[in-house]
Length: 114
Length: 112
Image (cartoon, rainbow over all chains, first blue to last red; front, side, top):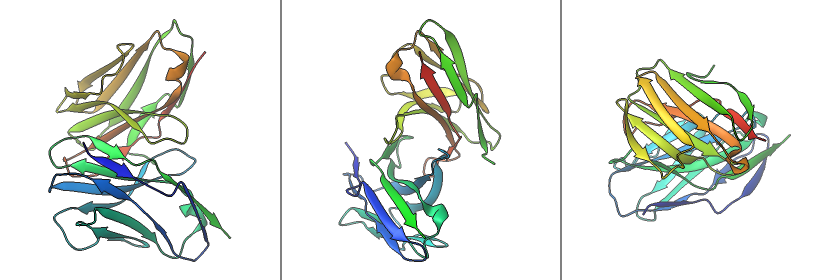
């Protein structure tokens, strides 16, 4: 069975600085997708970034980028120029190419200080 | 504005009540999902509908009954719930298997 691990329950960063959130996963499949979701206190889950396992190039969305290491099964999220609005719970998630099931990690709560 | 609309936003009900949660999306997505989320925990998948047919049921108690009347609507019927069922219930939809899921704002459910 696939698992997703987020080893950092909480992280903090100063406004305008850079922070990296860690995520590792375990799977025996070769075709899958990885995601980072953000859930602010307003509670809506927002898709931040998506990575296809067969693409070697790391995904980037504005200030958000990932470091995808397929062999190491690592998928970290880097947030550059952090803003107060980035404060939220961040979930890493895995989805097999063969099912509709999304498997979440336990989440990392990010605090942003002015 | 969220593209997945959930109603109501808050619901308080007794253990003997019957109520329904509603989810709607007009993005033409083929798959719709129900999740349960406890405070400070990740969402737990409950049900998945693909092309209006139930494709995944994660061994959810029968007091939760999903329904997909059409490709845009998803309901979750609630009956004889327990206090431990109090949680945030999230609906999501997705267009293709590898695409990210779009979530609604959720319904905060409290069981008295």
